[in-house]
Length: 155
Image (cartoon, rainbow, N blue to C red; front, side, top):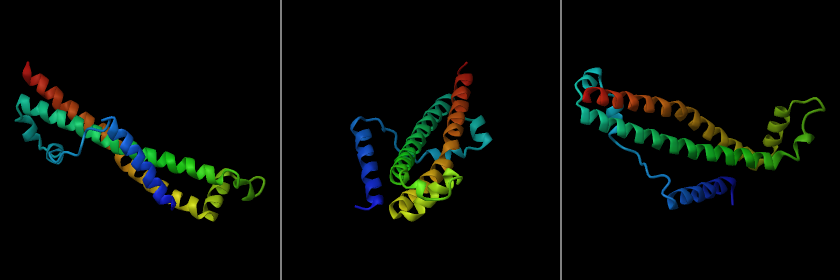
């Protein structure tokens, strides 16, 4: 079994566990894009019910993004732990006495095909985490703005 297959199997087990416990109920909503791209005129003319329902949709989307983030974080943790397990006892063979741990770490990874593949998966997961991490808070703030707008118009 290749390392990528092990990672896929690990993710499948995590997904099955989450699904069995109904912990990941929020799915992607196609209306989100139109809500996120509302013009200021659309927002100013929005009635109470629409503002609050759009707010709810955005909060649900933030939860969806958080579940994607958590999934990628579990991949990253799996890769990190697996790489360290593979290279921990081999790092002393690389670099001199005063070599930095990073030099030893990456040299050990470079020499091991399994660790190299895990490092590739780790880099991909880090990239996806970087892309999504700030979006969660922004969507929550937008949802809060719509929620506050709906409340203010109610009074």
